[in-house]
Image (tube, rainbow, N blue to C red; front, top):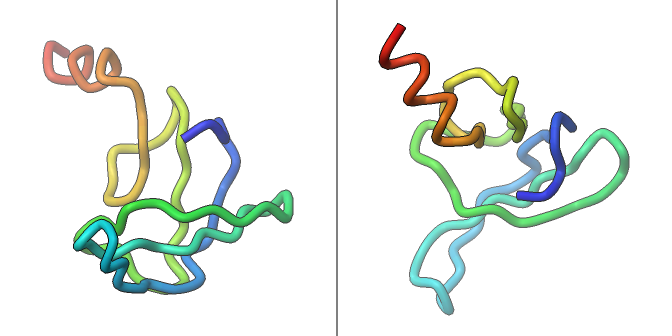
Length: 73
């Protein structure tokens, strides 16, 4: 995801037959809309964020080095 530290709200969850998977429509607070792969545990109305300071929770995306640093601490 290329929108760093911008909060998005899950607007819908849809089945995508081309991917054979579910996808989420995300409405970002800056007005942009994007699709992401659905993550188990994420539902309509939940918030997602991407970036190095994102919390570790379903739907969020953060660099792997952050996960490794947390594991070592």
